[in-house]
Amino acid sequence: MGMGARMILGWLVPVLLAAAPPRRPPVLPPLMPGESLVLAGPDREVYHFGDTASESPMGGLAHLLWVRLEGDAWASGGLEFKCTGKAGPFLCAGGKAHGRVDLPSALQAGCNLAFMGWARMSAERWMDTYGEGAARARMVDVFGPFLGKRMPDGEGLPPLSMAWFGEGDLLRTSPADLLKWLQDPGQEEVVRLYRRLMLSFYDESFKDNAWWVDAATTPAVGDPNATQAWAVGGNSLVLAVLRLPPGSTRAQALARFRTVMVGDPKKKK
Ligand SMILES: [Zn+2]
Image 1 (cartoon, protein in one colour):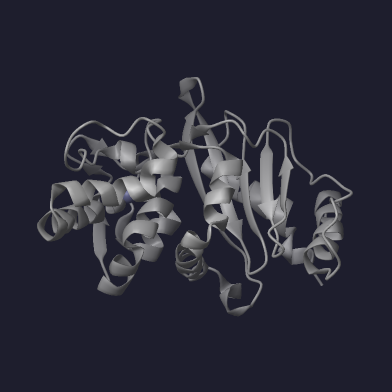
Image 2 (image 1 turned 180 degrees about the horizontal axis):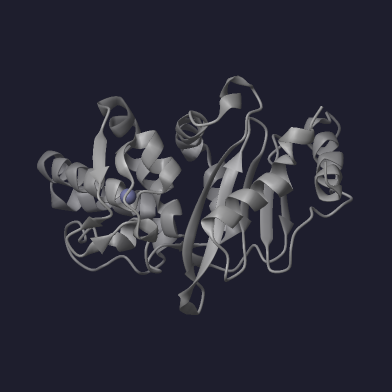
């Protein structure tokens, strides 16, 4: 186990398991320059490290919001999507063709086109069922905290372009705000469903304390040509949001989340 992992486990375990009132962790987690981390344990105490307050585009973490809106319906409907990497003018994340995906594998792969396809089907159903105004209100209800004043004008639903599924900077958040949203009792169901969907990919999913983690590459703040990456995850006790500095990728975010939060599993006793 690396020095960093030993340090974080050294304070995480007492902080998260102690029955005594929470204390400020004595040791900073092993963050790299420009990284920010916010985490909450079962006592709901929130710990901030680095710049957790500034907003940046949330990219494919928007998938979490779609799971909040339609995850139950999509999971029970057994939806599938065939991603060829391209749909009309739209390219999938990373220019990749993800092949045939269902909801868990689309989440795991970060397949933006699958989410766009399923969301457009749902949007048609909302329009038929509720009408324009109520369909719009339904979207604003979930996306509002991430839109600021940027909800496109109009009476009904906005065009569901890639801005709603992982591209551009329409949807933004900060690590602190995203964690606060995840901790809201209104999100309890989505966190549970997300955890179940993400964990279906890990061997250790049968363990009570199994970690799930999702990550996304986004445009960097102030430089649309550079990327930046986020990771969100937790186990049954902890929720955490890690943001990497400009220049980072999804793969790095996944690796850093595991290093900072989980430690090296190969070296665990
Ligand atoms: Zn795809």
